[in-house]
Image 1 (spheres, one colour):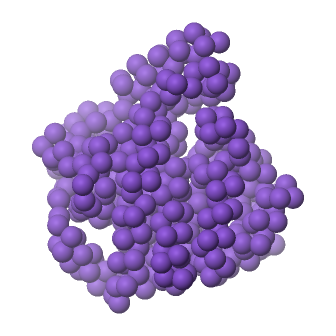
Image 2: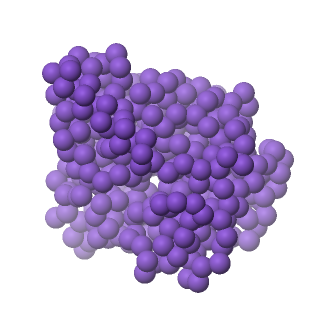
Length: 414
């Protein structure tokens, strides 16, 4: 089994090296009729590696927070499927059929804040969406994913990317986890700064996979430091969180009862989190729990956490780690209901026939801000670029083989 796993994962490494987009931050012309423009600000703890090579920020850890203003061109709606990033096949990108970088400018902290205020003053809503990506994600992949989320969800909020030093390699799983720890102070600092800004009204956080660890740790620190999470943080959405359920239970206790609505998206057939669970000693991962199990249900109910159980929802994502992006009909139905200010449990919505709603009550208060998460496709595993943790071959065994055998199409990011 060990030799079989090594051989199989070696093939995945070669496939991944051949298929991932690189150098996307090199600006391309923006002259395509019907294309849309998404302007976003990036805050990062990654190291600076320069724009000329088309990467901008790498996977190494920077000594201080860095900032960038980036504009992305999204192909015309009729030329693309909602929920997908059309990665450039070659550079310069074809803006008619592919995502393309219009501009990428590094800023100091003062300039970044000034740019933020300029855009906020022009916006109809004084809201910001902060996206925290997951494991195995390069800088440019996180940028393009947030551009796609902002465009497809039509979220009434300014998009801000918080990107931590993921190396974009499955072999670097443990490195990425330590990078997440390295970055939690920086995310808390960003949240504290935005919360104190009188020009800003609301903050929504969308975290995916390992990005949930960074997010929950930052919120825990904020709650301990301030006595509670700042009231401007209106919604926290935890999508497929790669977080130990017992650690989450402790984090919620330390965050305290005065927290914003938490919306947790789980799927018990998430093969990616099953693999992560095996790596971390077989304790359940939060994104794959059974919310109806007595102990889990009591924890979620006591913490007033709304859970959306997607286990029975089918999708084209064979690893079941990004079901939102694979079923646009369900995504748009949920997003439309929340955008209208209706609870997910609304009997008129018919959602009960499509998804499992375990706890309710928070969604009605979330309003349009929550639609950002459920109507926005999330980063999906790239099965063909998955790389094994070298020290875990013996223990992973059949889990790795099963995950690889269920691999789907190539979309970078986990």
